[in-house]
Length: 329
Image (cartoon, rainbow, N blue to C red; front, side):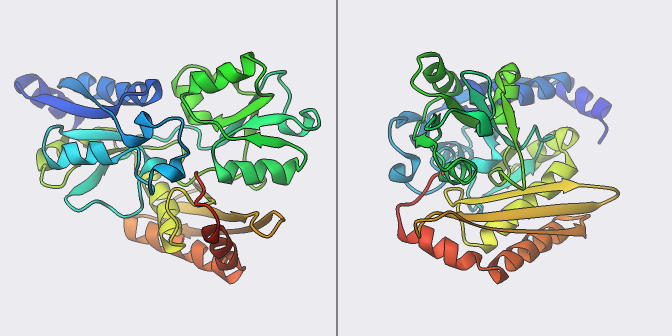
């Protein structure tokens, strides 16, 4: 169906599309981009704001609230109860096991997938002063920061982007590690001091990607979303999530991954498993490439990289981390 046909359907329909989102500034900004695209196709759209456990308990470490999915379950319930027509999520927050009755209908183009350092004095990670205080609630980020700078003190922090940045302004922290995509979408990209990239610094699985989830029975909405779906983002994140699932890791596991397309349909997928559970930082990295043209081939590539990680000793690191306190992503 062409975009022109979509616009005509939207103009002729009295239907209001109900789009569910979390209430945070970032979530609403991300959802706003999707809503703008739907309105450009001629549809009338209503934003429906829902609170999740992760939003309501911002002073509690994510791992203490529950397993992965703490930012999505209320939205999924609303989909199943048909109180909303679609939900916009950060894909990295979604468990790898799909909730029965729901599906991913659309993956818009991905933003920058990497983490970034924002420092008070505008210096990069390697140039922070000795014993600098760096804020992050993520064990994946903490291990990688300390692998580069063992002297740094990592301070666990949660809250929205502005509250984290304010801790720099209040001199509570020397730097924070955040997702590049969040700063870009909020119009704060100028605050970025340093882009942290593989192979030294691996992002979370599916970081920077959004996904629109729907009730599987809602075929009409699935068709509506086709024009804003981005197949390369979809296949790359399918491969990354397949890697994560094969390693039996949820979004709280210290696992990083990044998939990117080169020439043609070749997808290069890398993965990283981290641990500091034996009193030292240990890292296992593997990368494979393959022609990817459908979700099945993307899943197989994810499994291939996961198998290579396991061959290199990743299972020992995963077991060590699971024996300790569950980490956050």
